[in-house]
Image (cartoon, rainbow, N blue to C red; front, side):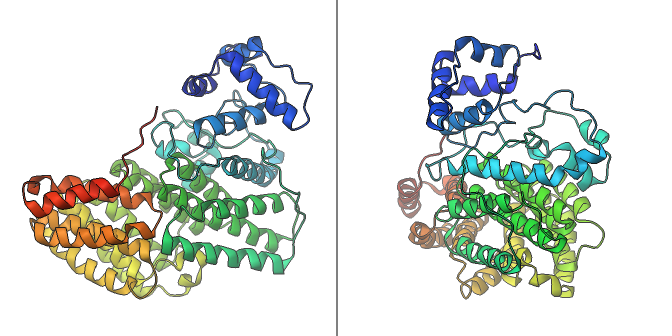
Length: 488
């Protein structure tokens, strides 16, 4: 018995509004449903879990994770509840422990995706704490990415929400998959391409659960032994699907869940020995923070992404990272850094070529390069009016190329961003026209990010609110965009 309160469990328990007796009954009921009729959880046991840090035996931690997940409408893992047995005073990993890390990663992957699949409420926003940024990255992964020791990583300031070390089976049991051969892995690789194309076209809401289900399956496969090359390919499939699951989660407003998937993706890339893939996964977390205006924290993640990607990062991959870092600098109003990073990105993009064949780099084409430059200059325009002109130039280039590639969601985001540029530059007539075009398309995607940008664009129109056309547009936006969900 730890004799120390379990603050993680206490905090989440407070959010549920349950009494201790209610939680005990829910655990017993859930246990009986899976054939564990012998459970006799009562109020006193729940009190010991919370107040004395007592960790119950399996399957109770899994059952608790399940009931908390359903109650809070977001994925709650065993580690989130503070119920992994090595959460306090864990010894320094030995060689044997390091060798077992791929198995633990596969177990974490299947547990987390299994929990997510239990949420039968698509698109419900997280109700947890604010995005933790680098704090979400476990020490072992942080040390690998940054080149520091595990001890140095553990000395990082601030609390961290780890997702490693639970060593628990998935809460949602599917049939137990066995080892697979090259043909099956090829099919899994192709499935990622299908899901990626759908996401680019329609947004994350419609296919998120399908991607998570596929990722759950891959996690099950990774619990078996495969030849080294086949195992490497499977881990890369897991990394690609986890990034996509994270991006889709971000797209529908599940922000905490999205960050966890990005970390899982980086961990899977680590198991595959693919540093560039890990760096790109971390950069997704930076883009997520930038969507919420957190530039300094995004820069911290980008430093980690670059360090993790290694010295042999190909030119086009470096160009992609440059655009994300430039966006972070734009939020801080650093126009010199923006100009340097975007200039380098253009040169690197021209140099690149062969890495564009990598599944995770195919989306970074000429249209995406212009789209990121457009977004960067739009962000900078709030600090520097001179950024309006390059923003408009890149908008024309990006939107013209995307119109031929079926990227409806990106086109819609560009239209909203272009309207924002017109508000910033003092051209309400052009802003109204562009915003109306965007409103006509918004029903064709399931992207909450689009709603977020519309809300920001709406705020930029405040100074023109007395003009009749603008007032009419603002009323249309209020009718089209749902109110922001607030944590209870």
